[in-house]
Amino acid sequence: MADEPKDDGLTGAFYGPAIPPQQETTAAPRGRPFSKHEFKPYTLLCTAFKIFTLVLITVGLIVLLLWLIYQPKTLKIQVQDASLSRFNLSSSNLTIYPNLTLNITMRNPNQKYNVNFKRIEADAFYNGARFGFLILPNFRLDKKNTTTLVFSYVTPAVLIGDTVRTTFNREKSEGFFYIDLKMYLKVRLKMLIVQSVEYRPDVTCSLRLPAPGNATSAAVGFAVTECDVESFS
Ligand SMILES: *[C@@H]1O[C@H](CO)[C@@H](O)[C@H](O)[C@H]1NC(C)=O
Ligand SMILES: *[C@@H]1O[C@H](CO)[C@@H](O)[C@H](O)[C@H]1NC(C)=O
Ligand SMILES: *[C@@H]1O[C@H](CO)[C@@H](O)[C@H](O)[C@H]1NC(C)=O
Ligand SMILES: *[C@@H]1O[C@H](CO)[C@@H](O)[C@H](O)[C@H]1NC(C)=O
Ligand SMILES: *[C@@H]1O[C@H](CO)[C@@H](O)[C@H](O)[C@H]1NC(C)=O
Ligand SMILES: *[C@@H]1O[C@H](CO)[C@@H](O)[C@H](O)[C@H]1NC(C)=O
Image: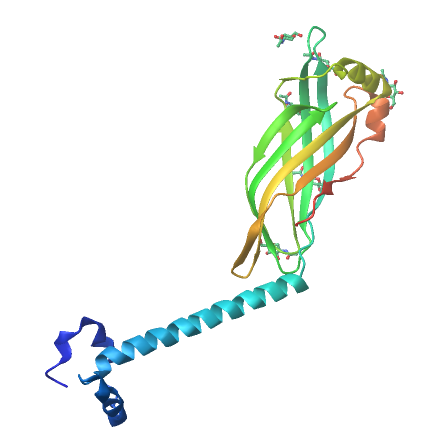
């Protein structure tokens, strides 16, 4: 034992245990004595690989099973409050001057999954034309948890469309503006250490907002609005 250790760099870790004499016998037919130092690492590597593969398959099956049992529920998104303190259309062109502040809640109804937001785009539309574009900061929404997001659209924008002015004038005289909030989300669900593929659910919130300066409409106010959220699939 003492004279052979240095000749094989791979063997260093496997010294020590008693050598069963049978191994010498089985190795004998190959001409050169089949040293335990060459044989054992290979067997161990094989066994380790088999175990690794089995563990991988088992983990995969468990994840698949859990996924089937705990189908993820879609996010619950509500506009709690929305106020339009300015919404003027230029008389000479289709520039809109908005001041829209939104307060929305996002709820993760799942008991097993955390939701990691990878991108939150929130756009505002009037009469089908986009006048607001925001990228909100990403965050993580824990299981059974709710968060509130508050953001505003104040940048003037040029609306596109032939019907913008007629719609605007009609809605102003009726006392309520109809604005759509659309959110384009990229999320991954996470259970323990397992992360899902990326989902891209779209969200639509159809808002009915009292026209600024109209006291009758302001008295009616804004009603909490449930958003339409695409499911995870
Ligand atoms: C916008 O409309 C408000 C009334 O709602 C008015 O007081 C204000 O002067 C208007 N601003 C512009 C820039 O037209
Ligand atoms: C639109 O009209 C406003 C005045 O109401 C003016 O300040 C603005 O520059 C005009 N915008 C465009 C794109 O013509
Ligand atoms: C928007 O309205 C809020 C009040 O609702 C006001 O505090 C803020 O200064 C306004 N912003 C702009 C750009 O008009
Ligand atoms: C958002 O709206 C809710 C419900 O109206 C309110 O309790 C909360 O204080 C609001 N949050 C902010 C930051 O305005
Ligand atoms: C929401 O998450 C916080 C930590 O981010 C946690 O302390 C709290 O218990 C969670 N709420 C619920 C209802 O699980
Ligand atoms: C104010 O809104 C009411 C409906 O809430 C509408 O009947 C009325 O015409 C509006 N007033 C003006 C000046 O546009």
